[in-house]
Image 1 (cartoon, rainbow over the protein chains, first blue to last red):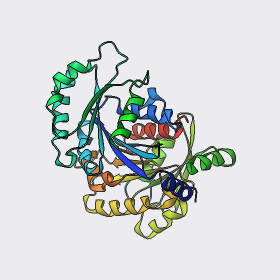
Image 2: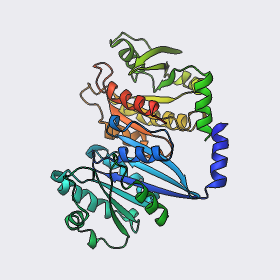
Image 3: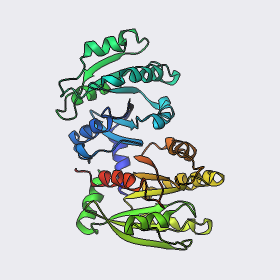
Length: 183
Length: 181
């Protein structure tokens, strides 16, 4: 009954729905970042130092400026990445999370990113790259990431690169605004 | 919003226990899982006709865990237990390739029930101690977990017999249910 009322209410007040995929390697901080977003929107969220690796799906549902934002955070571990492609066809925006401090995995990351962007179902879907863990000194800069991943050569979609940190909450507002702008 | 109200109501009037259902086909290892969780022992089980229910203290949280019989003839009664459930644990026999499709159908039809809307789902790919068990990725694929859009889910490779993977799964479930608001 409650969910019925809830469903009716949200149907009345939020007309537009944006589905966003949050992808990236394991341990890049996707879930932590998402939980911080939920917290900011006054929703139930997991305490950030207790978040286990995601092996499946984590969801955030937010309503902002009459737009309903649905974020799907998918597990980034190698074995579970194959579930990603089942979500591609519905995505209207793509966020790729990078652990800015984990330089040892940039090569792997580059391959995964290129592979993902080559998916035909994701053609034209706007991309935001979040360089996460910017609160740490060793975090890579936007310039470095841009060069490393040759983001200027990405064609056929808009690309935005920004810093993020779950601890200082840097980037959260920016990414929400970005989602709304591409919606 | 409705969820918020119902949460407030249940925190005011309901018991403080978190209600968890363990579901799955017969012989998946649900009862073994329940008692491994509660007693940390592997007990001799017989096929459950009806249910077992135990209160389990887990990370300072009181869980009321219902293990429902999984045989075909009594599966229709699962629905009697759906109201007020906080989370679903679904157990799969990772060796039983012949019946994984049935398990998938039972799971997906269970997830369509309105009483279980939004409940997080924890899937155990059980019996990983057996030599030819399917890995978690294969179980996830064959169950069609990727078709789920409206609830949080997680899959865990587990062996209820050896106690492996159980705490990994329940840690996730409990962290999520406990979440600060």
